[in-house]
Image (cartoon, rainbow, N blue to C red; front, top):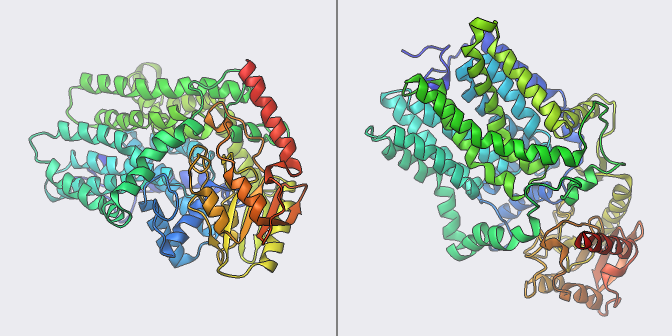
Length: 591
């Protein structure tokens, strides 16, 4: 008979009156999450990624269909869930970040549930490791990856629980595992490899018990949102938007060298964040940021590959068909299946995304090994695990774990200001520096005074022949204006490719917001190439500048009978930043 003290993943039941030790363990994790929380709500947002996680669901509520009416490169289910969340609570930045927090907590406590097989203290170590990895790369942005991984982890918890229970409890757990796996694929179809590896192995271990039937039923139920989307959007647009464009069109313009360059930072956004004027305080002895990324890459690959191998050997040696070493083996396979996320663009965000499961489970392996030597050396397994993980992150990636946690904590307690706020009514967003704030706020005030609800707005870079990024947050600040483009999110190789519909979309707009925030963007990939210049020609021929802010850091255009005749990429600071980009490109090519 299961007891409340038996871990849930090993078949234990959930008590209505949790034990004091469990409450203390959960409270410890929540306290670490809560400490920087105010800072996370006030921190700088990613103006495209966080912006589209507000704008896309609201377009869904307005009747638009992902992959048909706007570009969306991931699964549709996260947009529908967020659409319901915004319908209930409103589409503000704070509401979006609260949902992001809930996703983070679901992932953190999913790993807590897996690691609970080694005791509460090891579970706390694993959960805190995950906290440092998932709260730092993107803050509280409600991106689909965190939600998808959280669903995948809980799907694994349910699958493992099924193999440690019988009867109706087992059947319910199998159905839940399938439903959660289907939901995870609805969030991120690229989790298919990880889910197939781990659940394929679990079903193989459960052979002869008809486990596949309830699991399949659950999977089909979990995939219903995807089936509905395929019916509404059509198989062709869905296949193109979720599979062909992300893999074949987008990747050449977003991938980074693997392994990362030893002598420099490859990612454009990361290079800005680690610049001498922007990097947060950190006086503890450390490697440089580019050296940390280089070392971290190999640690991520090594842990992801070694963990399932060592775990499987220790499980086989134990001679037990199930148990905690079985849990570690299965969970390590999930982490291994997530490795491609780290390999395809090894900046700090993707390294953290791809390793959050494996790194957290490393605490379980270390504790398991230490337990074999506990009597001889009087080691406490949880303390050995904590020391090992803490020291590893202090050496390998302190900038991207401890330093950003400290930064958000300092903001939370008022020791340091947060991001630079721009606002319109109750809507606000946070940019990275004073110049961006000044230019953006002045433009927002002018557009609010001149525009009329129902007019069409297009937001993009000043040079539309290089659609390397788009400040989607401006759409969020003007919900009464209709996005004039399929490419609300702009990416190299998609919006700027010859023959794309971007030029027609520009021509359909009443207003244009064009920014030079990212004009100097250089990465060693296809984003360094120029695409079609036709959208720039449309701007010059059909639009007039009505606002130039901070020497063209932001440009506001209005449709007019005869355009200014000036290519927007040649105005003000844009020309200088383009020259800087060309110089950096020539330098890299010469090397």
